[in-house]
Image: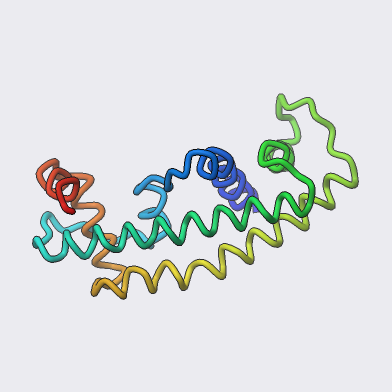
Length: 162
């Protein structure tokens, strides 16, 4: 649960800036959502195009998820910062965070966390579908992502992909 709270809290820190600036999450965040597999050294031009399209679709899904997470916090009257504070405090009771957690805040946190978990569970099939609709398996998508991270030429080709 500790890791889960940190993941949710970390993701929620992105929410205010994402909504305000309308910037999608980083490619790294999206590729981390897909199970790790061994990378192959290359990708065909078609695969790069499919990968780029999948990334665009994943960013849309991710933005929708982030907005729903922000709404869940708003419904529970918690800011992303307060949600993270409570999560960090639960992970490490000896934390340097000085904020006390009231019973009401704890209840709000628990309700928000339940909602966020459900949002993420509901989003996972959409992420998988976004990749598959571009003609890639999840495994191949992940392999291409790792190859791009390791290969500056592929990274440049992806960046130049319209």
